[in-house]
Each structure stands twice: as C-alpha cells, then as structure tokens.
Amino acid sequence: MLADWTYAGQPVDAFWALSPREYHACIGGFVQRRRDDFNMAIRQAHTTAVLGRTEKIGPVDDYLIGEAGKARSDQVPAGEGLAAWAAVLEGLGR
View (spheres, rainbow, N blue to C red):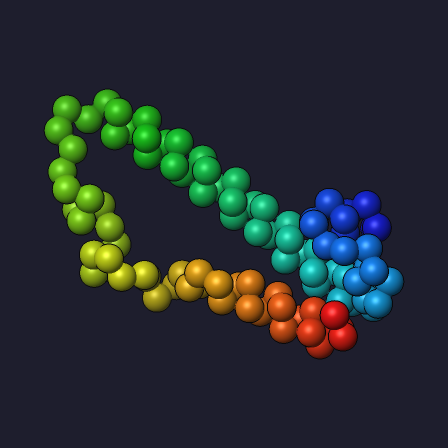
C-alpha cells in the first residue's frame, strides 16, 4: 500500500495519517485520473491520425464542443481539482 501511495506522488508522512477509507478514496481517485489521462492520450493520437488523413482541415472552432473558447460544463476548471486535493490534505492536517 505504501508503494502505491508513493507511486501516486504522495508524501510518505501523509500515508501514516490516513485511515483505510481515506487511503482507498485517494488511491481510487489517482487510478481514475491515470485512466482518464491514458484515454485522453489515446483520443489525441486517434484525432491526430484522422486529421492527418484529411485533405482539408477546417478552422479549430468547427471541432470544439459548445461555444468556441469556453470550457464545457462537464469539465473541471484547471486548478479546481488541485484545490480539492489541497483541501483533503488540509483536512488531514498537512
């Protein structure tokens, strides 16, 4: 468990302060994040391959979902996830 915790980039000291439930929640979040990162990389590779075969590529606005230049409502704004993680660690006294 400690190896998984440190692989997730978390400090060893924080590990010893966690309950099993907190550990499970944190590692579950890390695993989901890695899965999402992997899936995003595959989507990007696929999109690059498809666009590489396209004869004419339209403007980027044609490929964006929703209003161009605005984040979709289902996206977590940059930094919000980090702020949530900081709040968890703060609650643990870190």
